[in-house]
Length: 307
Image (tube, rainbow, N blue to C red; front, top):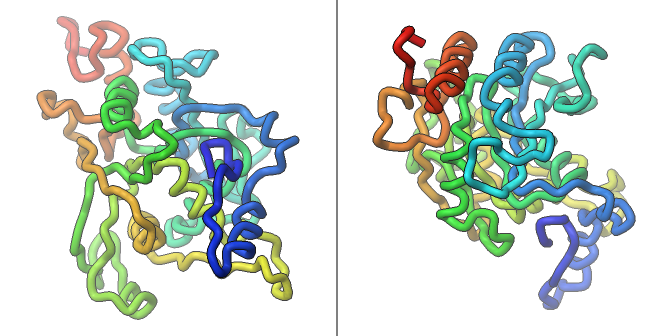
């Protein structure tokens, strides 16, 4: 399946005919496919229409301002097109602007249901857009777009032949029964004592073919018909969204690429490492960084007035 969702080639084997049917079922109808917009990078930001309005406004007024009407990054030395979307659940209101908001019906924005929301967001993206690369980010993540695009170029992540996830690569993590993100059921659900290889949910990249795979097995990825030979099981949602993605992709051949990012909001204190993303960034800090960018050309560098 290529970056548009169309089937390019399916290997034939003993069950090849049926596999071809299932994959083609996920591909978008050609008449619809031709009408879909193409973006090199699609940024999905799951959010709550009730608790994240302030953060959404801050994102709109800061780092996303780098994206022009032609979807090119104004200050990036790149011809790659970028689009961002806030993915809201069924709590969304009519006041939400439609140009950067997607409302997922019958989808909760509760944290404990985030895995389902991310899965359905990826499915929506596959069905409605042509793209090469997807970034999942949080509402308190600051994206250094110039660095991110350059990172993707350097690692050839826009190449539709690549199968890769990029982020902070974590291995052999163990579920915790208490703390910030308690997870007391992982072993019960999976039979595994340690987490699969995964990247924290504050920011990770997925190549298009990995998105196609997740979309194919999303709970609404095929018609709901238990008698149909084309029916498929859905992917298991786990308490942690980022661990869920690693679990879904565990049996899929792909690369794990280490991407320089900060999960603690200190990227501006580590300038030599050229972080592409910073997490736990407050609304005030986002505004400060945008002011810095306008005045000095660097979100981390203040001018003489102290900004």
